[in-house]
Image (cartoon, rainbow, N blue to C red; front, side, top):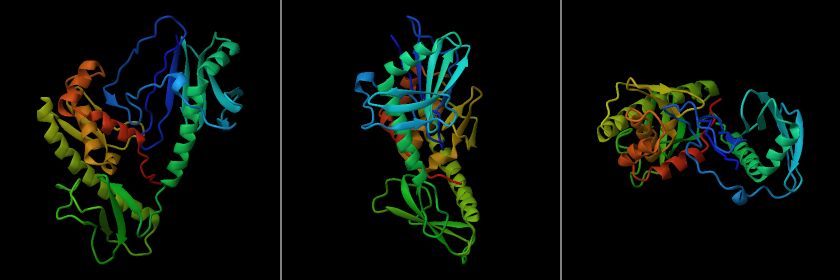
Length: 317
């Protein structure tokens, strides 16, 4: 029977969905398991094909490098990119470009199309999700000007250009970071930037990004110091990451890398990623033993993981 797996591929970029269809009786085991957290769909459950609801009404999906097309479901035209490789299974990858099919060189087109039809509900569902996600990402592009809002530690941050000040100053809390998330009565924060009203968008963006990265390091250091003793591990070094494909990673030498864009999320999500990576200092895998380590510090981590993969962050460009 075919087996399907979903993997997360995007952090600041949209996530892609992948399915591996085994052509043999036993599913192939992963040869390499990285000790890192993939951002959006890590550990996501796979819906049975019978529960995957395809979009309503005929739609067209066109991969920019498509060589072939197939009609799936109720007349949905799917133009897909076909890649031939030395492999033993068919792989489906769905991102905002569309559907890419990776197939063994020896497998005939009739078998490829049979596999596509068998997984049609899942494919159509994921294609529609990526189309809708693309629309949300387009809407999330930041208009860098006075009055723009951004998420910061799960709350709303409003930018105010104020040439009377120097640097960047956060207003709306007694202290810039300590105790900020979850404080009653604080729904909106203001970040005053020492820039003129006519500042160029790129200047505003760079000033805000630099400030966010400084706050990210401060928060991450605080959370690592809190959770490392709970997990019985020692973190040797913390570095910020700007990776497009990972929220964090851990090395056997005790180094942790965390994506600074996590500072957009509330503390529950940040704590999940911090705990996830620190747990790798005990278990460099994603085995049941690893998840037991995560659960020992965060018993309800699944909710934070769900928020991590559902959120569309502001697009900096």
